[in-house]
Length: 492
Image (tube, rainbow, N blue to C red; front, side):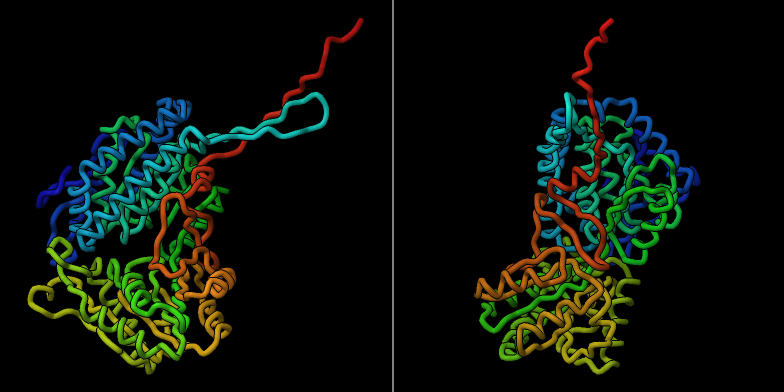
């Protein structure tokens, strides 16, 4: 696997590295230093079409779709095993390309391993049903793979969020074309090479780095595309939905959030503070399900805020590969400007910066994309910092006096991905979880999910669900078969 300085990453089509037809390349930068560490081929519309053609041929001719699902499962288990043996190399590559601390990248790759194992176990369990119908007839359904599925992955969890959809698509028997984020394509290409080594047929898993506007749109517009899965911003998600709808293709869209964290006065404040810190400062806050709105009862606001502030100020910033680092850099200089722009605007709106709100300027950090963990208080309800997804380590704090007020504040958002509740009271926990307008709710826990748990949002947070058994069904179509059993020979 290429990881050395200057090592090239090509397109991966038909089981081999392929240079882009235009010969264009871009440099991959280490966010901790903004220095290049590798180059990647940049795909074009022609490369996208070539990948779709290869994938379609592999779907029809390789036997992957027609094979016993148990064989696909075994191939995915081999892939999981190979990835686990190379976990450290993949984690280091992920950290080098994206910036997060190495311990987080190790956890991400282990999650990918578990995702592959989970969907490998479902590969031979894609079942139909029998349906009672009148007369001497047999009616049943089959679930068949869609064909070529397109997957457009984000940069914040480059391999994890790619494989989250790629794994069920492969398990169901589809051929896949993956477009990784332009900033972070390295582990996707390395993963495709590993799939070849694991015995996944050539052309079943293809990777085409390139821009969303060119490569992504070309993949979705291709007549061989049978579905599209996207994780990213709402604006891009709406564009993808338009392109998919024009061809009547199903689309699964996971589009971000503005997660409310509601802390009741009976909560364990020490545990809550740790969970809140993890929920907003992990991955430098670059998470769709970041716990970015702290809604805390006024009676415990001061003590909790003191605890969260101490956590924020105690985090060790640095390159993700350095020992003891607890928060790495943002992914790019542009992301730094975006995040600090939100903070500056909130300050101008009248918000109080409790801590952070600045770039890290120490000599060892100044060249990288480091922003100090930030907590904002007294944020006006109209401030963009309270209403829009910042995608950085910025927490906005709001007080409440009664549960109905807390519920109103929590649901006052166009997003509805993940909500968090901190309370010792089971009645409060269950009743509040039911009324939160979120696709997922965790109680007395930092943001957490598992491959077997549905991952889905409501409102502007997306359409469809990832993970769990429903995910593999999303990559199949249902066919109905009706047999007449009672027609005998005609007399005479």
